Length: 127
Image 1: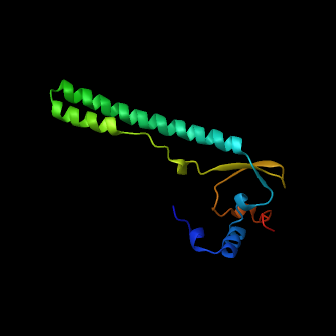
Image 2: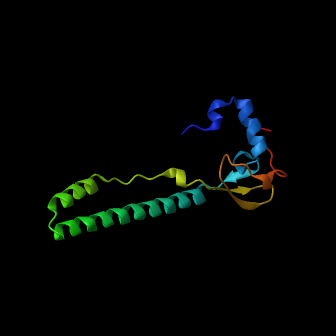
Image 3: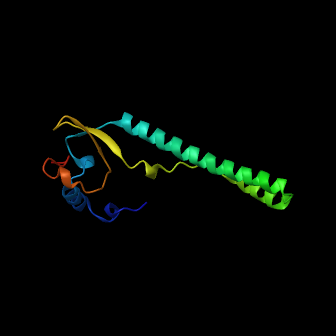
C-alpha cells in the first residue's frame, strides 16, 4: 500500500507528523503490544468466523442444488467452495494501544490520522 509518506523526504514527514499530533509519533507514548495482540486475535476470529459462515452458506446451496437434482450446478459450486481459502486482512486492525507517560493514562490511536485533541500535549519523538 502506498501512503503519502512514500513521496515525502524525512524532514517533510516529520513536519507532517508534528501537524497531525498523532500519539504514534509522540515521545510520551509507550506502546502496549499485548493489547494490540489481543485486538488482532479478536479481529482474526471475527474474520475467520465470517469466512466460515459464508462458506457454510455456500455448502448449504450445494446441498439444495443436489436435492433439486441439478448436479451440474451443485458440482460447480462445490468446486468453487473447495478453492476458498481464508486470508486475514490486517488492515482492519487499525487501532493501536499504548500508555501516555506524560498524563499516566492508557491511549488508543490510529497511526497517521490527525489528532486535534492532542495538539496541546504532543512532543515529537525526535525532539
